[in-house]
Length: 231
Length: 231
Image (tube, rainbow over all chains, first blue to last red; front, side, top):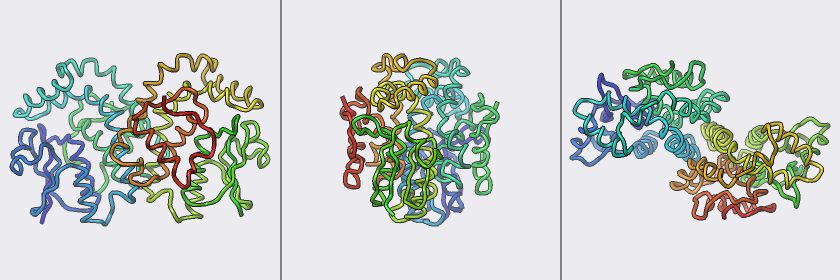
């Protein structure tokens, strides 16, 4: 059966979901053909009788798997060739890489880009998005993103562990891209999809790495519109 | 030939070097018997005609290997059983783990513990240690460590990616300890060897993890004196 990935969609067919990006890259890594089904935030509950609150959701016509880790593990079990995780230890360290991203990087990026996210959501999603995020922040999206140019240095600095690694090797996972690259790449895909303020500086090793990553598997990382990451 | 690891020694046979700890744990992981040769800072230049500026140095009677990464790779090549890196991607992510430690964690720990380090060096190393570190800091060791209790919260927070990971799995590398655990464990060995201010709080998942790590391979992580990490 053909694989369908339900993928969050914003205006102009922008696809910011970092969790869906992991899976798009993972499917391409394994050479598995797939289609995406673009879904608004407020449309996720219309899928599968509202069984799943978030994307990614992967359907193969017989089975449905929800959640990026569950999907990655399921793909690995069913399609063991071209592994995402070369060893159990590599999978373990992908968890660590994700934990770093969630604790040290995303908290700095989210206020910088939350208003851009809002402005690029589909009309039908705007009120939902604003209410959810303003409740999380405890203030308006405009207040969260105010002075974001001044926050950029700290956000760039938070990426220093990845930058240092890429001075020694072409990918975070070494000579070849692995799932950890797709995890961290997902964060940059998320920024690039909606970010009107360029995150990175020219010459940053992360820029070259992200270009390499997007080129992989026949340009699997270049299937939807982006802004420039460098400015 | 029997393996000899030249290992930095402080007072009371304390062994703080985080780089030597990686290798002690790696040798134990592979089940390779070894002895350590305790070396003062100012004694490293007396080894092998001064060929190496730092420890670890591993001798097997025929060959000498210097630098923790070179040693780990050499051990892996010569003793492939019980691998340190289950896959090339796992090795790549060990580099990332180290980069995180160097950029996000050690810069916060060093000022907190540099005076403790100094106070525990051998008499013959003190002037050398103070001069080298004060040049690095641009001020005295006493100034660097002043008010360190107030810096502890930030140091604890810097470890959050590891803490979050250990809420999902027993080791950073997953179900089993791998080289990334020995890399991060080395930082805690370093603190525990000389730190008179406990770094961690009771109940921190890092505490249980470090105890598990020290118990591995017949208590390979408990071969020299430590202070309590929790207080």
